[in-house]
Image 1: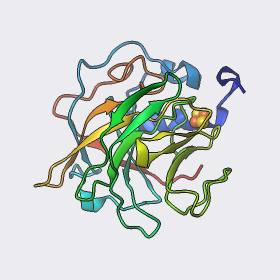
Image 2: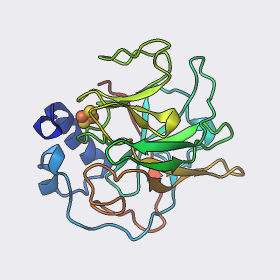
Image 3: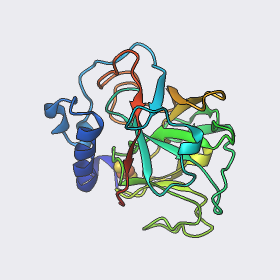
Image 4: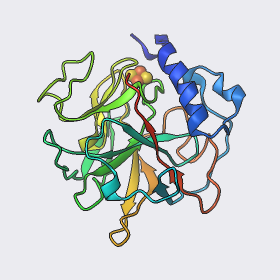
Length: 245
Ligand code: FES
């Protein structure tokens, strides 16, 4: 089925609801009434990527030890603008041990281009972040969801050992590999999830978002525009989403 023929009604409803929460009510209501394929907001944004420390809902910085390995709960934070959710993942193996995530050259099937994913951060290099807006037609959590190693991915052939830990979108079946820069495993997407690059402070354990690499965040004119900027000296707060697709 061609992309333009797909009507992601379920994902669209969830998208609108989650955007209202994640953008703290800032996004314009008129824009939110648009279809998932029409969510490009008027041009406004930022001139460069901010460095935002990731904090919990009390304002306390998230540290390596506070991020459960393979958590069944989805941890999300907004970056680089206020209405752009990202997965925060501490990747592990099927026994729950952290996995070192190495660098990887990620292919964008839509264009044939590649870009460099630098790998994970933290003492085990196991922490990664990716846009949580599906690159196909813009579904967000819980429709797009991380399934830890060994856990069946509903509606797919990935179960048990055949799932090394994939991100899967139940709207139309796109699958991404977070161990390899969120490269495309199954379509209909033809673009990987953009990678939000993290920095890790070995002294304090703080984790910060510093930039985005890869394809343009879905529905945005660029990775720096089409949403509400954070105020200066802001942090970005993790919210959790326990919903199942
Ligand atoms: S929006 Fe279609 S697979 Fe995610």
